[in-house]
Amino acid sequence: MENTIKESMKILPLKEQYIIMETWLKERLDNLLPSLMKREGIDMWIILAREYNEDPIFLSLIPPLQRTASRLSCLMFYLDSKGELECLNLGRPSPYLLKFYCQKWDSKQENQWDCIKRLVEEKNPNKIAINVSQNFALADGLTKGLFDELVKVLGEKNTSKLVSAEKLCIGWLETRTESEIEMYRQIYHVAIRIIEEAFSNKVIEVGRTTTREVEWWMMERINDLGLKSWFTPTVDLQRRGENDSRLSNQVILEGDLLHCDVGLEYLGLSTDTQRLAYVLKADEKDVPQGLQKALTNCNQFQDIVASNFTVGKTGNQILLESLQEAQEKNIKAMLYTHPIGTHGHGIGPTIGLWDQQHEVPIWGDYPLYHNTCYALELNTAVNVPEWGYQEVYVYLEETVAFTEEGIIYLSEGRDQIIEIRN
Image (cartoon, rainbow, N blue to C red):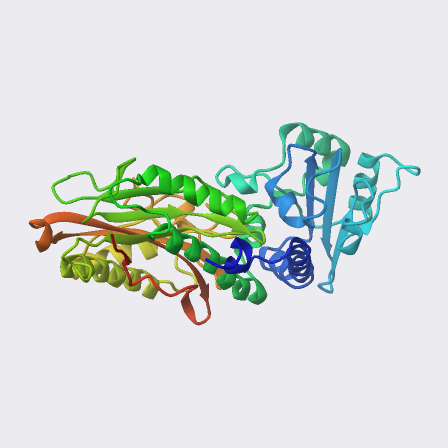
């Protein structure tokens, strides 16, 4: 490429990135959070966090320039009877937080815990939500030490008002605003460009380059862009005559079907993608028809799953209905789709697990809401004539948005096998 890496991938300057993320936070606090608190019947939410041991929810509620908790940080949200939300900082003053939170603790007037107690008593909420959960890790960020101190400070009357913020946490993390979804397309474009470049002669020298070397190339590329992989990229392959469908650390040869799994973080959002490439043999002009049909078969299962995304359905319902429909159409399929957004393995309805192709208690019982995003992850298997009817697996994963329009694919190309010519 003639352009620099950042120009070719269109990575925004750091200041612009931070401005976008701050704009999103303001929009989410002003518009999203009040509606979620009303939906869940919560009028007060308290988030406590210590520096270097932050509640993951706390990190999603502060502007990027704040970065961490400061000693003991406390955010309080109060929704009054008119539906107006107060966003309060009961921790140390910060110029970054002042854009979003009203400073309510003055260390010269009272200690921090007395401030918390005073405001709870002044507001007199019906429920005080705290981040404790038996089942969802991202909603269980309140540490035991801080919980014990909060109970001691609140006293018996207000302690009786404590409730789990589990569903509020899920709603906050899983819901994307319209502007976030629109920008998600550009974020995903970066991930796709990295895959396309990795699966090219620029990176792969057929007969010499190993799949492990391509993995390292992806890591370096993401790092060069100033971004981060939220998991280590994997590149593996299938080869005629080999039973293993995920051969790793192999020298890439003609006739190999390559597969990658890549996820990056950009602008506070995560991507997760699995796509395929084929190394053409010297006498081949196109990908073998049997492999193309295998991909089409998997695309058909993607469409089946997407058609079952309906508001109010649980992850388990989507799983079972999709697998049943696939079976009726003679598609050998597995489904293990997960929420994605602020976190790669996000919070929300689990739609099957790799090792559990049946109902998943609790995680799979959570219902589907609009304006949420998913890693549509699945696989299918077919016998390919050109490979002596060997069973070939197609592993696919696309980051998608679910809106009132249904499933929206954030990029094109899911129906294509990238061609690598020697």
